[in-house]
Amino acid sequence: MKNIPVIMIIFGGSGDLAHRKLYPSLFNLYEQGLIHDNFAVIGTARRPWSHEYLREQVSDAIHETHDQVDENEVKAFASHFYYQSHDVTNVEHYVTLKKLAQELDDRYSAQGNCLFYMAMAPRFFGTIATHINDQHLTGSGFNRIVVEKPFGHDLVSAEQLNKEITASFDENDIFRIDHYLGKEMIQNIMPMRFTNPLIKNIWSGEYIKNIQITLAERLGVEARGGYYDTSGALRDMVQNHIFQIITLLAMPEPKDLSSDSVHQAKQELLKSLIIPTPEEVKKNFVRGQYLGSDTTFAYKKEPNVDPDSTTETYVAGKTKFTSGPIAGVPIYFRTGKEFKEKKTRIDIVLKHINNPYGQAHSNNITIEVDPESKIYITINGKKIDEPGIRREDLTYAFSKEEMAKVPDGYERLLHDVFVNDSTNFTHWSELKRYWEFIDAVEDAWQKENEAGNPEIAQYLPYRMGPKEADNIFESPTEHWIYE
Ligand code: BG6
Image (cartoon, rainbow, N blue to C red; front, side, top):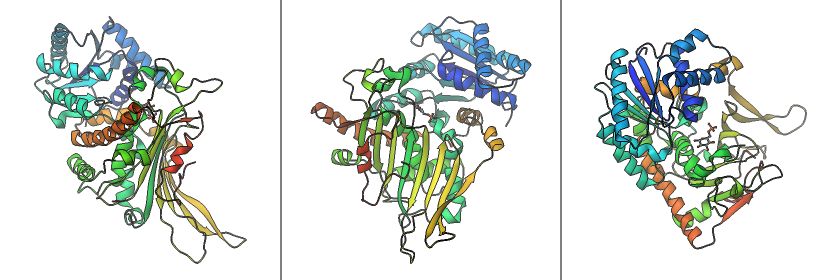
């Protein structure tokens, strides 16, 4: 779909996310003719920038992310950008912003369509939403809002934020963004599950022994210690990215591919998510913090981190559903900073079968999401020149040329917002359920902290995280496939 007229207001226009992701992604859409002449972007932030200065920043952002660009295109694109210095708590500033948005709406014939993007510190989301409502910033056409994560800090704060946003926006117009849902291999989960009889027919507790999800990162918390120490791995990665992956793996087949049907299937599944008791949290969850090395800080010594912090930089856990195609199948997940390597992968471990050869391996289906993108199934066959069984991978992969064409997650998701497709965004009822789960774990940990005996495993940097995570499996025949 081309040429959707819109005025986009980015709260956080001088920030890192806008610079690294939003401006380059918007440019890519512009170059492909997916947004065209009738659009303008207002970047807002506290700094006293000029329109011209923002345009230079936009141009820099494009040059930093593209090897080759047509300078005339960059110039033409940047000319659509305007800057408004804005203090999110100042009523007058919203009045000024509204005036500028209206002027641009006239100039660009944007037909009253408004897109608000919350790309700044999450503590301001509620304030901005309230002012959008009180100072009537919404236009006479469509009004959509994109909200970055984290959406709340727990269920109560998420409910409050949702209330503030729904005062001006319908659920259908709220795009809670999770960049994992824009990743190529995450978008491949549904087609892989539903188009292959080979896979679809074994997608049940009868054949699947367990599912394992690993979101490992090489980097530590870097400059984000202040934010991270109030969040931790569970809120930062499990509440959103890991739960979205789990949902795609466990949901029933949607009746069609419309956004409504996909969300309906997800919601049906999530009703049966088992919320852990404190005893289950103790048994099935491991939290950890990275130690220091000769060249790196221990987590507790990172800038802006409380030296007595109990915040986890690693978490491993287990979950299950009581309904859906894989009801009862244990789903293990882990995520952590300062792992051996950056690696996002999903392993579907199939059950063994009795066979006359004795020791054959199980078949596993692995989806590698980052840094590689591929799916492979381990297959057993005979050895060539000696008795016995050998194991090879059957791989579904992409060529370099194909990979070069894969759009960044943000580009995809921004495009979805323009064309009003919320399939790959988080619905409120899904988010609510994820928070119920996360709150149960956080509450159990909080009680342990208060009792003065929190079990926080310390792990060496750039290895595989705490060894305690090897003990969360239900049976001794289970272990992490990616080691
Ligand atoms: C973000 C988290 O949502 O995802 C970060 O806040 C994390 O802490 C990042 O580093 C990981 O994303 P990706 O795409 O690099 O796996």
